[in-house]
Figure 1 (tube, rainbow, N blue to C red):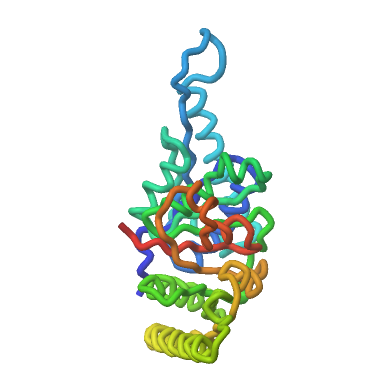
Figure 2: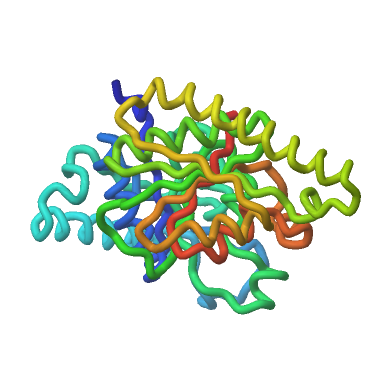
Length: 297
């Protein structure tokens, strides 16, 4: 039974990064037998300007409509050149909204199965001070979000990696990861990272505690993964518990043909960058699409 009744929404802006996100979202919609919505949003400046200076609401909407039209033509061309790689025309629609792109996609994340955004390259100043639509949406979404790098391979998914913690978010991550692996006919690797300061014991008691902690975490995650495996018996899976920082451990396990699924806690993009949140680091630096498994609200 296909749970993806509400479909996939992809944000486009006419950039190369947006095109790559569109291509990946189309493949994802095909894998899940889901409807695809191509969305572009525009903001009308509220500051006064001289008559005839800049673009007005009608012109800005026309530009956004052109972006969506170009995206739909790209899909139509792919439908001819690579049959089966994108959804049928009847399962694709385009939308234009008067809103900031990030706000529009965050809002749609409450009512769709997956929101997809592209990741474009930013310099250090932009990342720290200005941020990006992809960072904002992945941090503040009300449901699952996929961030797609601009140079990702569009094609078969060779492996799905689930980055899990030992908290109640593991179930959300594993639920999405198992379904991704099942639809892609790919193996799943469940990965948990133990920070170094939890295992570097000085005394024998501390070392014994660290070993018990590792054994307990491994047993609990194995049990949780087994429960999901019973729902998806065709998915081959393995569990790896590694020492190190979570973002570094997960980046070591992925390449451009991987889909990485991680848990997310809703926060502002700036807080994620300042505090060094794992999902924020991964959506900005991982070489593969990263799905942040925010629970729907």
